[in-house]
Image (cartoon, rainbow, N blue to C red; front, side):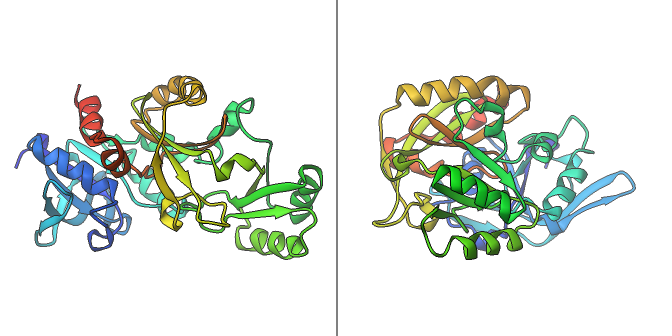
Length: 311
């Protein structure tokens, strides 16, 4: 097996990945069609030893539907023998994540890490929109409950969430008149002492929450995410429903604003969250959702991804 034929995927354990949903398996399946073998390992399996970077993991194969058809025996792979390393483990963006990125930045240029590990280390998904504050909701990032209370008293209604969470976990809508605001703010600041993020509540989150999928700075697909009845979280991971939608003027505007940033910082794949004409998040740590345009529109974004990477 030659270097040019290996893709190492740093992800959650293989057994935990769901073929019908998982983007990593979809990317591995498309890579196999191009003659690549996929090697899976977790961040805990990654080692730096006196200049050598290796991982203990397993080669695996998938079929056209993303189902894992074979998992090989455990073995050790020098990551410099891989053509690409895909950073695909789910957040949280914690010190384990940082350690893995610190190791990966030492790989030779002949092994390309996607997305760029220096970018992943420097930019949080919820903080990237702060660079585009004219199209970002009014936002407060703080670790002190008193600051969040002050922001809420001005906005009257906010979305409160962890600064480094994912998948809709611990996302709350707070209204200044709610009796439980104090308890929720205190709980969140205690649970996430490194900071929480509060944003003005946008009522369109119920009817116009969208995921924009961008590859190498180009907008490739958009789909709408509708929360369950009575809920505000459209994330598919917590029960939201994905539906087709037309690409709007707001989608084009947001994509055009982000394109130079994504290209400059080597973000090959991004999942951008938007509500109305506001930019909410730019997911770059382990962007998901590639299966959804396949189901809704018949688009194979894994093919577009590898076309962009290899061209």
